[in-house]
Amino acid sequence: MNSIVQCLSGTVPLARYLTSGVYRQHINKTNKKGTGGALVEAFAVLVRSMWSENYKFISPMTFRETIMRFSPLFRNNDQHDSQEFLIFLLDGLHEDLNSSNKALPPPSMPDDAEFEKLPDWQASAISWDRCVATNSSIIVSLFQGQYRSRLICHTCKHTSTTYNTFMSLSLPIPSKKLRLSSVTLYQCLDYFVKEETLDKEDAWRCPKCEKKRKATKQLTLTRLPDVLLIHLKRFSMDGHFRNKLDATNHYGSISGGHYTACVRDGYSDKWHYFDDSKMYLVEESKVVTKAAYNLFYVRSKVK
Image (cartoon, rainbow, N blue to C red; front, side):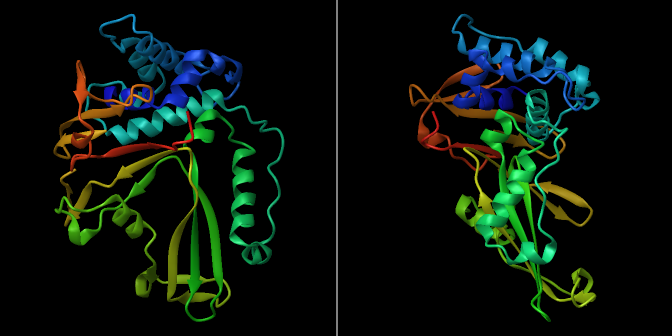
């Protein structure tokens, strides 16, 4: 929890929104998926305290109690995955701040045949507009992106295209280089969008051929958010067992461990290392390590 709170607090556009109090204008107290504003209020109080410079240390117990009140999953002292907590928190903040009018129907979609004929930019825009028609908040504006998934039948060349949103981009690590510290983020991205062949038991049932066919599947990133969250898949399968690969920062194994965070101060341009109650300045050269697990990238134009 502490590592994720530090990373989100260090995400300046979100921190500014919360500390300024602007968020109060957007609280949706009638959204049954939200907490009536309790979660965003508790998080805003915590972030405001962190940025106030009035305290030598801050205990996030009130915020944690709010989390436990609305999520049975986090009511015990078990270890949980930081990525899991990050998505839970962002989803909760979004629902508390979701200002869309769900009484209005989303924009209509062309039928499948017409949709497949559209240029990618137009199909992407239509899909995005349908999404934000029922999901509109600063969380969506800052963190949500979109990718395209396209299937192509090898027999008749029929295509089927869908557009999906993501809050965090989960990237696999190229399997042949799992234990090498030289794997780059670009290689992980290339591996994510690598063309995949579906055949035999994985063959695609082509709606035009009306039978299972060998097909090609490929993902393409069609919309990147202002704050790009990347989650590195640090676990591999070995028979019935999951193994943690050398890789907020996570130290330990799949059954236990510890998270820390390295966060850049957007004003002083200095990096800070956070380890629960410990905090100190760290050289930028020490930030990128094989322990990286959750990565936060903010567009340079976003202040």
